[in-house]
Image (cartoon, rainbow, N blue to C red; front, side, top):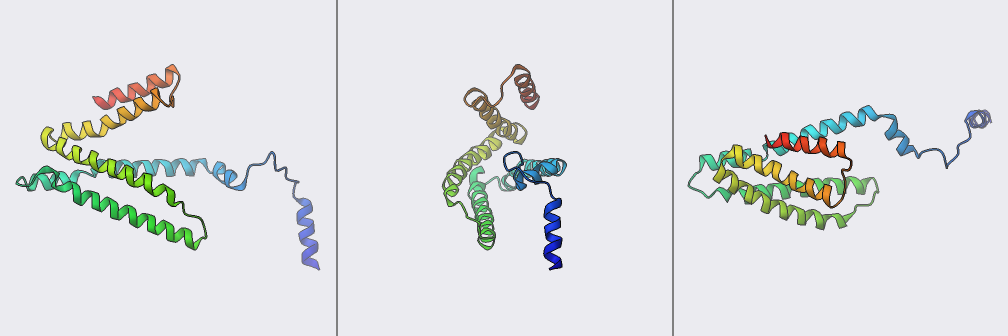
Length: 179
């Protein structure tokens, strides 16, 4: 038929593909749009930074308006809200994956739950620190302190940043945060 002859001509016009030298289609699509990926990464970083920067503001305002309650009274509602939001996001993802017939890795839930418990304890100490030290000092120590500790572990234990120049740039950035 005319259609099969046209399809045969199309196949003959295409260059032969070598599976050893060509990237898979998903890799090619990612490398073709580096500007879009970069812009998306910057947008997500700004959103995450904004949300992280204001996450303790409601708790601090509540503590200022209700000095008769202990400063840690806001920890349980905050943690329950995080748990509900995280569970909702996971259920949405699981539903989407089930519709698309993609596997859902349930094994990642346990480590995420444990890290959420650790975050809750850290949040408890953060609120207590903000109450005792004031917002400017307490939140700054809470925001920068864990980053410095994680960075020291990252550099000394995992060797993620190497080279004299890269280490100088990194530690300069850390010093600027402490100012």
